[in-house]
Amino acid sequence: MQREDIVEETGLARATVAIALRALTEEGLIQPRGKRAGVRHRLVF
Image (cartoon, rainbow, N blue to C red; front, side, top):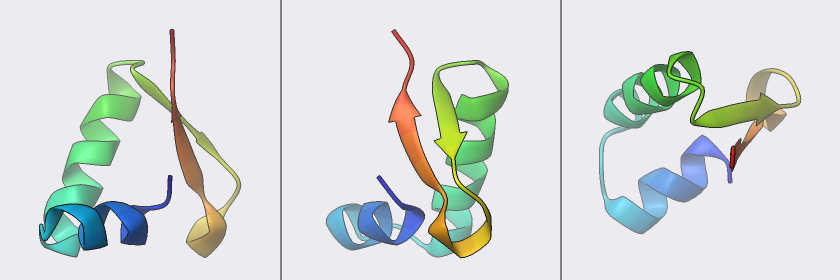
């Protein structure tokens, strides 16, 4: 799922979503795939 998808679905600000995605990545709960604007995130099980 891309950041913009999350923004659209939740109505949260882009900055809020970016901070949350960064925190989830640092905790090892999601993994980014791709680079820059095309990055997608997936859950880690």
